[in-house]
Length: 280
Ligand code: HH2
Image 1 (cartoon, rainbow, N blue to C red):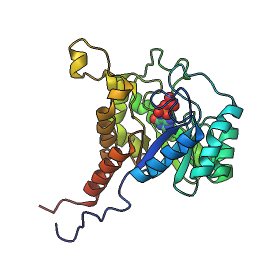
Image 2 (cartoon, helix red, strand yellow):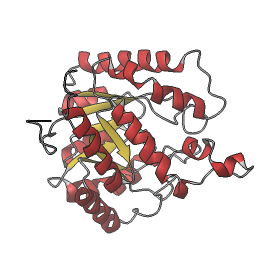
Image 3 (cartoon, rainbow, N blue to C red):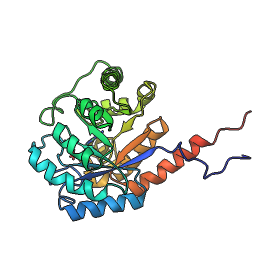
Image 4 (spheres, helix red, strand yellow):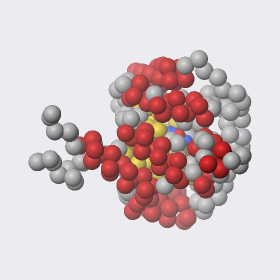
């Protein structure tokens, strides 16, 4: 196509948010980056791999995870944020008000809140805010979750939470369907397929499927032969496929552990968005 450069896609490329869990018990990277130096090195590695945002978390949200004290969560995340601030945009993955405030003061630009309730902190500090949908708490969220229409219910919930955040003065509000948070594998698939409904709300959409258990339960050959679901180490392909699908369906950003591969996929989706088909 005349006049369209393959490299002329700046601005249309979905963003890649790299996951950095400074925890002993996160379901995939738990224990790898509990040490501050290891976490900072991984943050720098993700920047080199193409991360647009690094999401720093100090408390696992996996089903059954133990709660962490405010003091311990601060001890885990603040030195990492201080060290990486200035090198990349940082978000803080927390549900605690004090942790969110301290993290923004230390350099985070975004509050990523799986409880969708810290909008006042974002408003007070001028941070961007991610409102994520979840049902229940880590202790009970996977106990037989039910919805009449998961796409409609999650979309309505996020519309209300986003409106509440805007009403208190948050300037940059994101929404996230919360893949795996109180959802069956079928609910997760329905939410991914229904992403255009969420995108139509008009807020940038963040999606996190990376290495999550539903990917291991989707009918792999092994599973069809009576085997067990794939463990997190074997969910790379599903993670990349689902992130690429989410971006193609309009997600503005994907939250992933595998930054290098996903950044390539984001570049490709951005290129496809930039290139308009020639008129027939
Ligand atoms: N998923 C996890 C944590 N935070 N935040 C948003 N906005 N969206 C998500 O889908 C999301 C999230 C769970 O993944 P991870 O951080 O890798 O694991 P853990 O909670 O065990 O630390």
